Length: 116
Image (cartoon, rainbow, N blue to C red; front, side, top):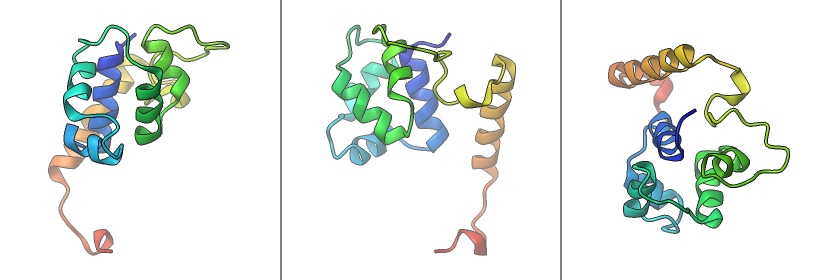
């Protein structure tokens, strides 16, 4: 099971965002320096308010973030992987998906489809 920090980092990277991007998307309710501390598991008791804000920004399950942070979650059915819960992927499959996403981001070139 990943740590809260690992999962937050994974979610941010899936979106292709920097720490500062998350700060902006949270309307500065989550500072990039605090997010850095969270992602590196340096915050032992994160605020549920911050976890809620991050769940909104990442469009992730709040209960799963709470569970990873060590909070008791009633009816917590989460597997510990916020990004892939609904797909029921194995750990190896999750790594393959992440590798593919990173590969596509490096190879992506602007096309007419990408134009607004």
